[in-house]
Image: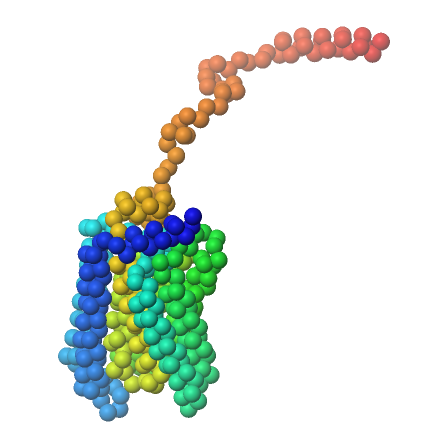
Length: 351
């Protein structure tokens, strides 16, 4: 029965809604175009904006253009996401394998190629890190990069597969989705250690932005696996993170790290494209997956209304509703008579 449901669900998301595929391609191409302009601006900035001693030339026009490019990319991607969420009123399937459904053969080919690129960069980093100042941290980063590549391939392997709550596949997806997050966190630490003594912000700011955006992208992608999907945040940070990674490619660093940045950018484009292509109308998602809209935070959970009204009310057990007006004072005369009767009855009970 579960296999029939999985096949039907995957068929549903592979058929129809061609316009969502067009939207997904448009969004992905937009991020790539911004990334291409970012690579060019960063390359020109590196040649013209720095003195021979490494200091930055204040007011360099290419630095201003790059800042404006960041703002334009941010605004454009936010516009796409708001269009999907507010105007089109779309939602995502709650199960990760259905949220990234697509042509399994081509999707796995692209995922495998990306995984191999990432693994190649990690192997190169293991070989070339010995001459660097933070060689031990870079080697550890390379090992985490291999795990990140394995986690990415594990997530991609779940395409078109249903992952019910408590299933072995869901547990595997939770583990796989946590590996890229851990990798980005450690890379942020390594980047901070490398640039801790650098006073020129432009030397490290694009790299920090790229790693932070990638971290948030993988974090929100992992939300699907953990049953807390936030598809629009995942789509935005995947596209913005890939753009930011492209911007850092002209920087001077080890070739292995350049390859790893490129692979991380492609990973985010992969998830952003498939998540966008599988968005569907909220009503349809709500009918096919009960509770999905509440999990995504698109609607408020239903509060008990009629059921609470039908419950019988507790009977009043004699609470004081009259206040001081109905208060009856017990006089001393009454208390004296009661004490006398008790004294008379006492000896009789003893006899």
